[in-house]
Image (cartoon, rainbow, N blue to C red):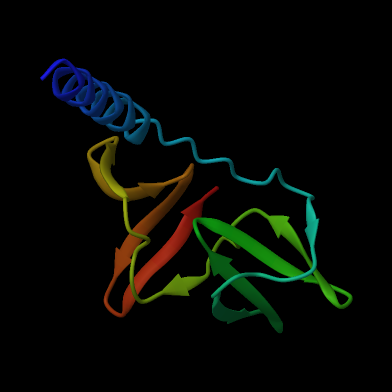
Length: 115
């Protein structure tokens, strides 16, 4: 009986610690200028003759056979906003914000307006 109580207490403690750890989500994004060899599951956007890649909230542009983290290209149009965007109003105008990039709704999607 005593060992059963100890096992139950240990199981409860492990469950409490696991749920506390599950709440810690730390997202680390690469800084502008960081060079990477591959981009995991990117969406590719052509803009001014360059193929930009967007993955996990980060914009990349080609750098030889690699990719460099860059700012979102102002003027680029996208069909779907990134998951987790916020609606903000600036001087009474509606924008969509995601990771410091502002998007404006257009007839055929959204346009990057401010980085």
